Image (tube, rainbow, N blue to C red; front, side, top):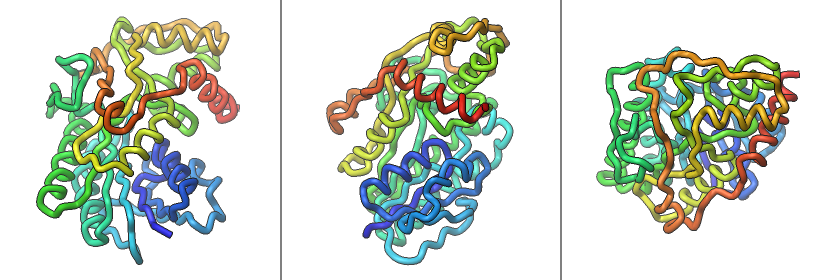
Length: 311
């Protein structure tokens, strides 16, 4: 039985990845210091003899007994609220944490996958964003701690691939939503859903004309799994190219929830991206992947989840 290590495995995406790996027959070791992750995301795995949880800060030395087939590095704060509240831990997990995770992969002769982000493109001047685009990032702005941590993580992953011949993968994750998101993590999906369910105003930053694209979590995990099992070492965008304005998204949430909520405008945060849309040509061509879940279908599943968590 092959063992996979998932750092940040108690987080939103990490926990869904643990589920997928277990369903594929792997043994899974989940590492998480619970800074932004939650035991609730993995409590359904208690008693599973193929699942092990270790509470650990992955910026420290990683020791895993026995053979390891794959290291998935998902540990990192991932929402603006989180990485602005924890700027130094965000930089440390992107730099030191990635270094330690790569070191583990090297010592075990394991494959390695880095969960990177569309934020490496910053406030893009190219639209939609292909993997060949180098980005437009403010390194000293408040969002820079996350953007640059991930850009460094990509650089060191490729360095380990070139120098140490580690089979590394890099997934650039675009906006993803679904069950297990935190209600108040500052991202637009949980923010809009929770306020709509309470009948409160939906907060829109700026005029709402900025665009986003939303990928349901099961689609994202499918893309990540296909990438992990592929021979690709270059970065791959995984996301839904169906682009919409934040204002239109707010209206969609209000419609689906049947809420009487209205929108309220707030100042636009510094360096907030004006557009965000993945070019998924590489994923289609190399992985045979594209999103399948329609926005309304995924939102209804997510809304039902938040109805239970807010009850």
